[in-house]
Amino acid sequence: MATYLPVNSASENGICILGSESYPADGDKLEINFQSEYYIAVMQLEKHSFLVAGVYSDDQNYQLARFGKTCPPINETSKFTRFFKMYLSENPASMKREGLLLNGSFRYSAHTISKEMYQRLVEFMPEFKYKKEAGCYYLNGSEQSYQYKTFHPIESCNAQSSLGFEEQEIIEEAKTLTNSNSCRTTASRIVEMVTNGNVKISRNHRIPLPCYDSFARGKPEQFLYVMPEPASLFLTADSFVLQAIYQRMDVLRTRTGGVDKFKALKKLYADIAKVPAEDQQQILSVLTQFKKEQKEVLTRRRNQFDWVHRSTNTAILIDYLLATMRLKRAM
Image 1 (spheres, rainbow, N blue to C red):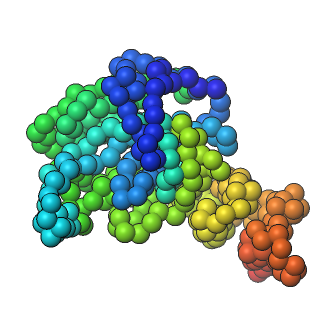
Image 2 (cartoon, rainbow, N blue to C red):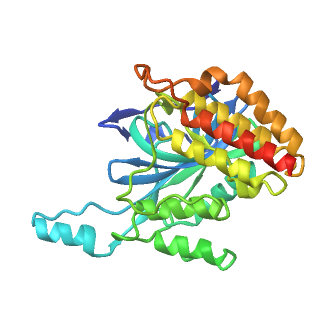
Image 3 (cartoon, rainbow, N blue to C red):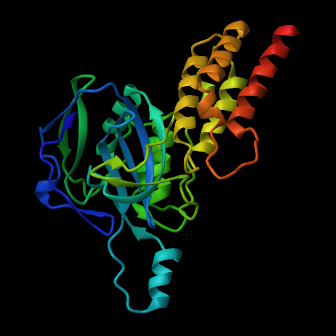
């Protein structure tokens, strides 16, 4: 279990309505007593996209940081003027913190990050221009203890010379909002920066994010699909096998009823990533054992009324990888 101090929030039409007491106070602590992993995500509520980072396990999900780019309301009675300002002109913008307890239905794309990547994120976020006080949870001396720290609003922010070119560019872009530089653009660019370019999420706000779920006080109704680190980061592993599994997980996270297959493949992905690419016998053994142990999951069809006895795409993939590894060993 984990405890937020304080926790006071309400929601209206899926949007967190937060009073001043609803944000954690400076110094508030969060203790997490379960084995967790870090993740970072771009989430979308209607037309607004924002950045979320937190820790999760199969049945727990806690947001540690949440920020979004916004601009002042466009108060125009003329439809033409309003359309022009919204889609064809440049509007002043700033970053803001958003409620840490997700309530409502969201589209999202979530990805695994390391502790070091999370630290890079929270060290970077104070550099932005904020209209009001902001903050997030920082590591508090251990893997499972966090402390909320606030940073005060910066009305005129100039990119610091100590920051790299990419960081400076993101900070400058966050000062304006246009049709081609939207809240999605800034959130996606921060994810790319934190993951060293290994995770790319569409910057186009017209393209829906791949996953969809309803959240209540931060917890998803179904399952939080968090993609593992890309295959390119596992330098000694078999990139062909890992990439094939990764691509299948990427498809499964968009499908209803794909939770069990996604979980099983994610565990297989982690097991394969530990095996050196040249140890083909061990890779073959891991795949063989996986097929045996996960037979019921692999053969389960999403449509229970489909009476045609066909193999599922996930089962076909495992058979293909087994055949490929056997062929490699025979060569």
